[in-house]
Length: 242
Ligand SMILES: [Zn+2]
Image (cartoon, rainbow, N blue to C red; front, side, top):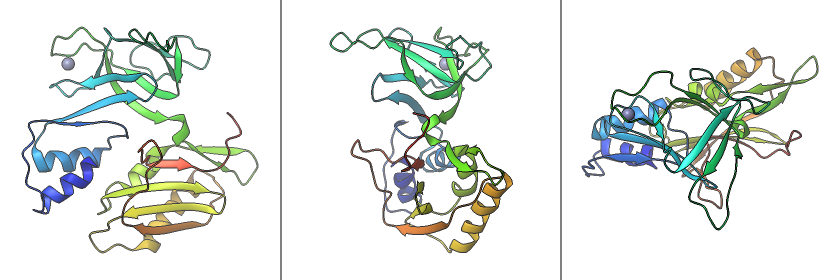
């Protein structure tokens, strides 16, 4: 939504002057941040939240990462054995304990995000720890078979890199039984679908994946889930590991 609104502002169809822009729910990609800043200036505040545990962290005006709301929630960054990882290192998951949920308490609720805490304090002076990088959710890593057996996990960053700069108001990669569907919403410039297909094919092949059929589909809007979400990468295949 932030990207759509920024595009409309840049096209002269929307004329608003927000004092700040807070984004949440989906991954804020570099290109979406750039477009929002181009439209309204450097006033973007990324908010890291989950449905189950509500807000976890938010940017301050230094924009060096997101401060964990440590007066509201305990966030533990741990490895695969649930052992704590130090600042500066990516964990495998978060264990989250909100301090204010009394009707449905959550204790060390597992959030499958790979997150890194900053080893530097924030210059703003707030004591709350900074999350300086989120590698995304385990659900967004797509599994493909490999030619020599086994499977390869393809990180969502591969698709961010290839698709995020396209002149579209939104995109989504969906893994289905019949192949990979690349949805492009509101294409507002010349675009060669076959070139996109071939770039994705090459990138997947470079990771030794057996490349499935790839289909680019142009849509008016990226479909939302029942919860109103529009993830950038998702799989509709049954997951073996969960
Ligand atoms: Zn700060």
